[in-house]
Image (cartoon, rainbow, N blue to C red):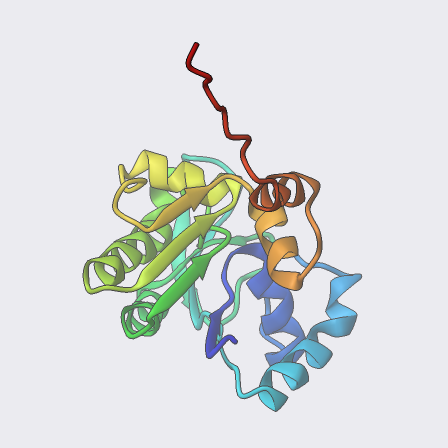
Length: 201
């Protein structure tokens, strides 16, 4: 059961353009996936799941560490030829509150291009929030190669409940799909260990 869901990263721009008509410039847009956005939102509402999307962004004129940057919001949109590579401070503040009130957190996917210093603020802030939630007793799971890499970069792998590089696999497991490796390990529970007996001469 999911109570609240934060959508960030490249996926967020498809939602923002479809739902609110936000100008996203050259940001990632999933043309095929855009057709099911409204269905996802409707299903979330029918299950009382509160969706959270960013409202401001760090935009760049190119995908590079030395890019020119500026902060934009939904009202202004992202200019043509620019792309959103991180979330802004207003979004960070809103998401921080969501994470810190949660009792269970599953994080799959960074907030921005954290590998570049200019675009790591969002991911770093969310990581701090997840670590803080863990300290207050929440169960926190980081799944996915990129998110696990962020945990390694910020030295937080041992400050959350569990870190896994299996992002897609973790999501499939939550969907209820049978994963061969997990099934093989689970079957060991049904195998009783052999007991050895010694005979005294």
